[in-house]
Structures are given as C-alpha cells and as structure tokens.
Length: 177
Image 1 (cartoon, helix red, strand yellow):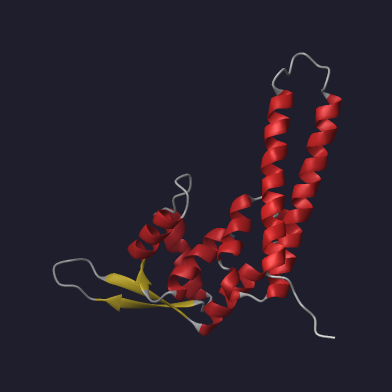
Image 2 (cartoon, rainbow, N blue to C red):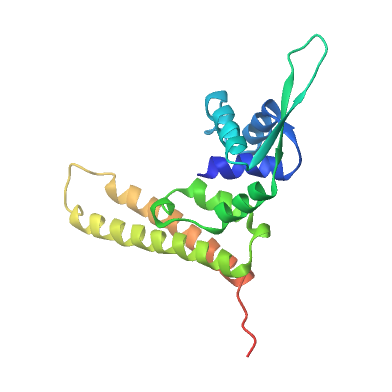
C-alpha cells in the first residue's frame, strides 16, 4: 500500500510523467526498494481508471510522446485516506509505518496518534514474543547466537518505541475543557 502513497505523493507535488515519478521515488526511498515500470505504469493507469488522476499527452518532436499525470480532487482525498490509516495487518511493516510518518503534515494529530498506537501495539507484542522465545530456548546449545540476536532485536524495538513516545508527545491531542 505504501507504494500507492508514494506515487500519489509525487502527483500531489504537481503533474509528472512516469519516468519522473519513478526517478523521484527511487531517489527518495531506501536502496533496497526500487519501483519498476511493471508496478508504476499499471498503477497510474488504475489511478486514471479510478479517477484519482488524469492523463494528458505531451507531444514531442523526434521523440516518443509523453503521458503527464495530474492528481484529481478524488486522488488528493485518497492520498489523505491512505496516510490516515495503518491497518493492523500492516503494522509489522516498517516501511508502511515510516511512509505514513513522513506524511504526518497532511493529517490531524488524532489520526497521527492512531497510527502510532497501531505500531506501538505491534512493537510491544514483538517484544513479548522475543522474551518468551528467548526463555524457551535459553538452555539449548544448538542456537548459540540466539541470545545475541534477541538482545539486538530488543534494543532495536525499544529504540523505535522511544521514537514513538517522542512523536506521541510532539503530536499530543489536547482537549479543551
């Protein structure tokens, strides 16, 4: 789902042709992810079919014509809706979470808190799972590095929990009584 968010975000910043969308996304996201034409072009065509975007031909002399994509109002609304929700079944995916965080400026603090809660719930569950697994395998010699892995993973998860707590404070929802 985060790929849809990335593609729509490119159109939120103005009309673009496919290669420009691809180039921008590939330069923005980690080196482990690269959007390719087999993903991008069917996606933007679906956006056009679903009226999330429009497509116009840019005629060129001595070159193939380019299609330029423009986001519609419906596309802008879809972009916001995608950012506002982190489904429980995607809470384990760090990219899904971080992409939403990177677009927090588009949503209100209440929705930010919901996203942070969903990810926090996943992290706390992962920590409990690692603790139980570590206890279960503690005396087994055939997994000598299990404890090292568990220690590293617990540190990583706790660092992310600390980040979530900072974001919670930054985007606290204050009610007026």
